[in-house]
Image 1 (spheres, one colour):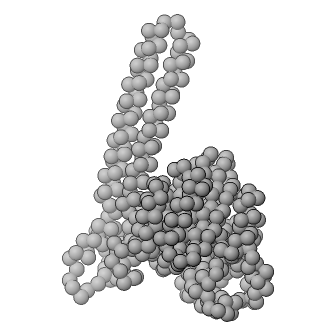
Image 2 (cartoon, one colour):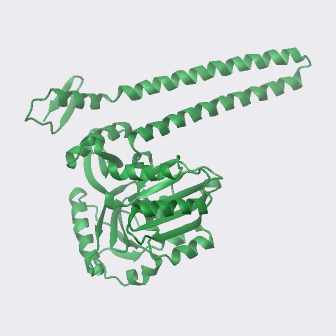
Image 3 (cartoon, one colour):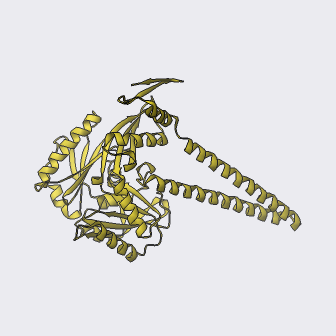
Length: 415
């Protein structure tokens, strides 16, 4: 979802225990100013209660059909490393959606996938951080938005917000950075490079949360380094509600060789005083939600169900056609005005305008033809995906395809 200048953007996070709503203004030169922040803890441990309170907050903030980004806590997701024989985002998206059901005990139509490309090699392979979310959880958020009368929305993962916060710090820290957000009994760890979110994981903290956090960090770092040897973090950043920062500053270092410090994320944003005041008194951590608003959500990390994503894309194409037509009409009027100044004969001016209108009609038809061609390409699918589908259909029972290598034209090695 791309934020538009002059409009507001709403960010929300809701679970069974709490809800957060932040509003920011999108200004010129990609400047984003945070206006308001509302945080509420739910007494009845109820998602339904939270949805009612969220609707009340939208009304209180005078919501007027502006875009909304929903941040889903990482506890509803899982991350996996994959090496994929594809380099374009379209190919990667199709392959990871097929791989998800092989990694988790669920059917592919019960899962929704997102991904971040970690790196690409010269052989056409991509190393990918695959993120899988249960579709039932996403459907619940979609229902909440629709019940609230919200049609323009995207759904992403809290980890993307933490990655965006990491980026604000990476100018001072080259290499890999680990960012940990502590939010009550829940914690999330992200490993980030300058290019991508490489891995993320969430867990419940024990009663002795300081020791438990150190143990969980070491466990997570060990798993991360198995897949990314030689990529030890250069820094560990800690985030949470501002009231927790005195304790974060006193935490013993998880690793003596790695610099560790609290990340004062509020110092790197543009915000009204009312927003900062609400943030500093909150007992809920708004860190990942604030990070979500710092940049546009990458299409590969929008967890909308496929049918909603398709409808959203079609709406975008129609909008582009209208814009193109408007631009051509404006060009026509400018040309007409120029001729009107130079020619005394008004009949000749009308002939010129008629010719320009004819050109607009031809251009509109050409744009419509291009759209149809692209739609046809999208339906045709990817040859790699077609090969996988056909192989799965004809392969004997008891035999599974673990991989294949493209050797050359009409030459594939199956394993």
